[in-house]
Amino acid sequence: MTSPNDSNKDNNSANNEAGNNTPEKQNGMLAGILERASKSGIGRKKSTPSPVESAVAKDMAEIHSNPTKLRLAFLGGGSFGTAMANLAARNGCDATLWVRNKRTVKAMAKTQTNKKYLPGYKLDDRLKYSHDLAATVKDKDIIFIAVPGLAFRETVKNIAPLISGQSIVSLTKGMEKDTFAMMSDIIKEVLPEVNFGVMSGPNLAIEIMKNMPSATVIASESEPLRHAVQAALHSAFFRVFASDDVRGVELGGALKNIYAIAMGMAAAYEVGENTKAMILTRALAEMSRFGVEEGANPLTFLGLSGVGDLYATCSSELSRNYRIGNMLGRGMSIDAAVKKLGQTAEGVNTIQQVHEKATKAGIYMPITHALYAVIYEDKAALGVALHLMEAGFRSDVEFVMAHDHSNAALTAHMKNSSNSAKDNTKADAKSKNSDADK
Image (cartoon, rainbow, N blue to C red; front, side, top):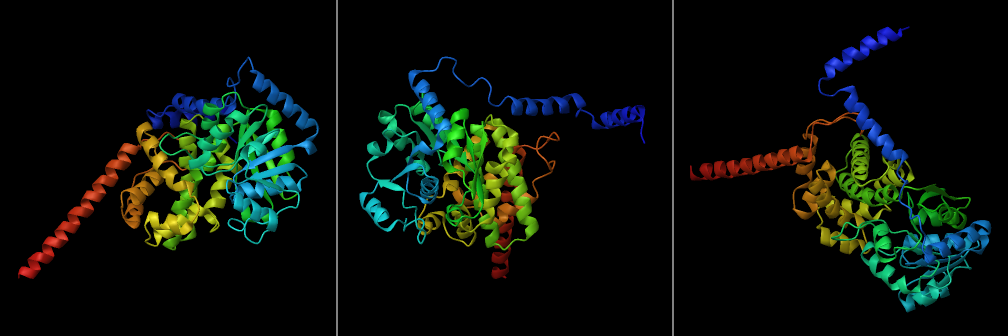
């Protein structure tokens, strides 16, 4: 056994050895993280709600008391939008799936299947289909938007004149190209008075259609909206958890696509389980590090929308981003890989956005920077990976120990390594020429 005095002696000894890394600094850093975690939802609501917000609150209260009367619109006929619309219809909600193409709508209504994205899976008889946006959105309680990130702003603008008391939930994962805007940012910009939420998690659509047990997270500052989404989508095989950290949940869904590409590339090189585990855990460190800088709760990344979605996307060949990475690892160009995939892989755009944001903000994200170098600067993937393995030392778990390594140091290291490789190549070429002269 140890006495309190012994403990104090040990602490004093450790403090002296730590030098500049004093307990006050460590405690201050940890206290800052915990304070941000505990206060992540405070101070963001308006004290004087507008008429639209009041109408939304009234609608959500009525829904909460009678969830079977939910009227839902799902905009976007991709795999996930279709799967969620089908789940809501199966739960007894009045659910309508909107698809832009009239011919596609007729085919889906006739065959009760989504032949392009979910071939072979029969949709619920009660699910409705429409290509008329105004008719789809009118008199609905919640509008779920599941269009690709490139079309998200346009879709929100198109429904803006049709909004009265509806709430909006984004099912889209990613960031808007060239603006770094998350989907929630776009909603707040275009429809500042509308109640909204975001949904994210390890949600591979085909597995949901197969009734494999799955779960997701609905994040919103509105408790009634969270309850309404849970009532609409929760089932025996699909659990819906709640969060008030909109930023964290949304960032988890966007950032994990980066590392799915990395894992797909690694799989092409037939790496071992040790390497996969290292990529996953360092990816989680990057995600939480970036998230905290963006105002997210770091604890959110330990949940379904963080590590859960990261694991599912990085370990499944059903993941579009994983498949893109795998094709890149096999020597295919990014343009050819995207064309062969035939679907949107949000991670390609996210890598560029996060690389630029992290570089400007000085956020340490070596995997992201390495992927950017491979995709956009045509660097050799294997060479970049070797440079990463030599890029200095950090603590294992983020926010526990102070770091003395930075993006600047990593960039300098990779640049020096790249220059050394070029010098070696030139030296080899000069030696060969010299031998040939002889």
